[in-house]
Amino acid sequence: EVQLVESGGGLVQPGGSLRLSCAVSGFTFSDHYMDWVRQAPGKGLEWVGRSRNRANIYSTEYAASVRGRFTISRDDSTNSLYLHMDSLKTEDTAVYYCTRINMGAYCIDYWGQGTLVTVSS
Amino acid sequence: DIQMTQSPSSLSASVGDRVTITCRANQGIGNSLAWFQQKPGKGPKSLIYAASSLQGGVPSKFSGSGSGTDFTLTISNLQPEDFAIYYCQQYKSYPLTFGGGTKVEIK
Image (cartoon, rainbow over all chains, first blue to last red; front, side, top):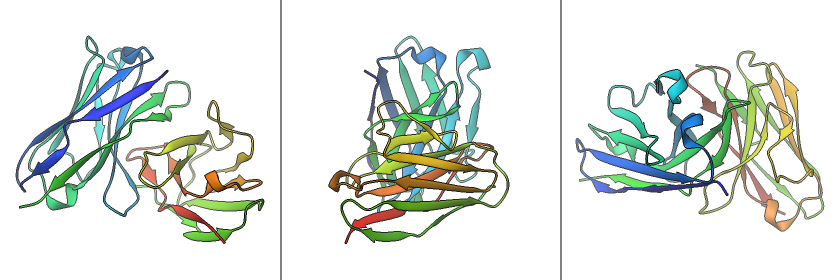
């Protein structure tokens, strides 16, 4: 069974940093691209960024709203995906979801349960 | 960026009804379109990819169609568990973008 479990959310002050983790199981993590998606309270879904697999040199893509502030990394040895967030703004307050990419269609097929990040003074 | 527009933003329907949600892209995306369902307080669930292919385990009451710029999600025989918010997403080009969502409520 595919499982994606996010952790690391919490309250952080504007300008601060936070690192989210996503522990995965039930599939060969190293084969898959992975995305982060977020959802501000009461709002819709926003794509944050992508981590490609080892075969694609672990390259990344980011939304313009987070580029230069957020970094996606992964550790295939521990089946973990990370989202390091710097220079946090109040508008980064959201539930952050870890998602798996279907490597046939290159779209999301599984979602985690999400972790809440609140940026507030 | 490719803009995705869903309509309606909300709809009311009765158990047993058939409903259709529309998603429009402001430029052609081929069939690179996915649909997701989100229930209150839960993470989204993947329903459809490549515009019309069901994700594993998704019942056939859900169906998708379209290509290019216009897409639809149809839900047949609405049941209480289908009342949720539905989102489309294009994955043709970066940044990947979502529609604003359609809330399906009980009439």
